[in-house]
Length: 173
Ligand SMILES: [Fe+2]
Ligand SMILES: [Fe+2]
Image (cartoon, rainbow, N blue to C red; front, side):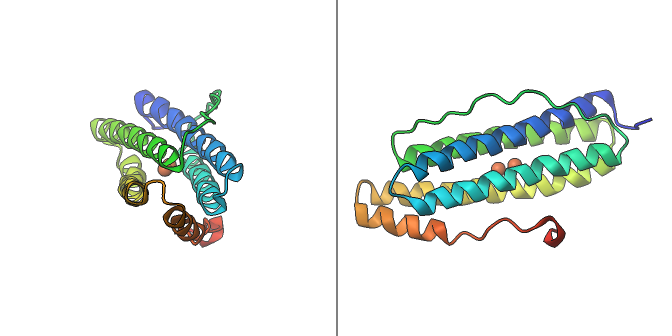
């Protein structure tokens, strides 16, 4: 029998869906870039998609380890049409801000129910969200700076392609 409070249990299950939805959305963004001159941004978004899957799996394994039932729910079709690289990254930032809100709500539930193990897991996610929002905001700032300049855009695309791929689960901390 799980010691997880029902409220926390439900929110943790919901977060698996949030992370998988984010993964699916980033995959749609990657596909949009694949159909554009920006192969570097496509790579970036694919890496991002894979990272979100690893986030979903952290919640999945946490529920399993706590002896709590995993409930997987339907993932909605993601947005797949965009007007520009900037618009894709702005969509990414809004998505990350939404996930940050979800993590905050989870953390508050973990505090309320004095669930220290959940708080420990969520602390990792709080740090991760700060990092993710920062990285996306930096790219948005630079995309705004270059505007429609093709040389600037291709430079940023090249930089985006350098983003290191997601580590294998065995290498993860
Ligand atoms: Fe995530
Ligand atoms: Fe994320």
